[in-house]
Length: 297
Ligand code: SF4
Image 1: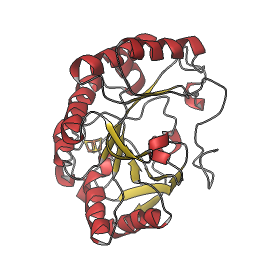
Image 2: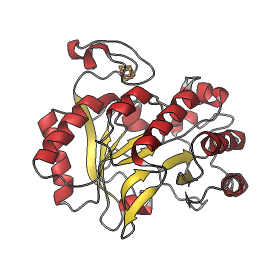
Image 3: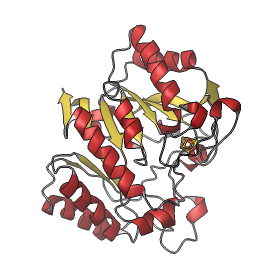
């Protein structure tokens, strides 16, 4: 797959094993920024002992406002082989994390799955969480059938305009929708938990952007009409402008309480049954990957 890379809808078709690079600028190594128990994910993922996050570097989308821009716009971190990555997974299990959650796995997926198989053979028992940006190829998601326990995709845009303006692609919603349908086919349209901790299923994240309530409504309506109203949603209020958009006419402010509440109310009106919400406040939840502990908990 890395010899003619079509791992995401960009389909760069470069030979990453020979050092050719496509949009994500990754060769065939995995580049990991950090791995640690994460206490700031949704409660079923963080539980009491943390989600076992593995922050991978680079991204196949690179949104202009990305909250993780230090590691998604840049390639920063340690190059790992499959064995190193499998050791990282087992280390997170030793730390008693509730799951293994690679973040932005899409460009790394062949090595990740090799590492997951190796770690499983060495005793990894935790659920495997696929925390992705939603710009996925449904055929690649189809190949993960039986390997992923919990899908945690973003669904960022419901229209082409916002996707093109903020992420440089106009077909985001087409791929995000087809991929979500495949994820739901594999693991169902709900989130199975035990003792409040997620074991299997799906949870869709949507970050509300300033001045973009219509986009959020379009996302909700699409999931309601084309997938299921049982799909659990995490409607996120934590958008914080990064330096690159500090002068942008729309993206230079946080969202208002009125914007957030109108999106949550729309989800309720559409009949969604499981919604995770966040407080609209001034807390800075944007990570700083220059620090040893990127998040403030
Ligand atoms: S994973 Fe990277 S190289 Fe492969 S298609 Fe996507 S952006 Fe291009």
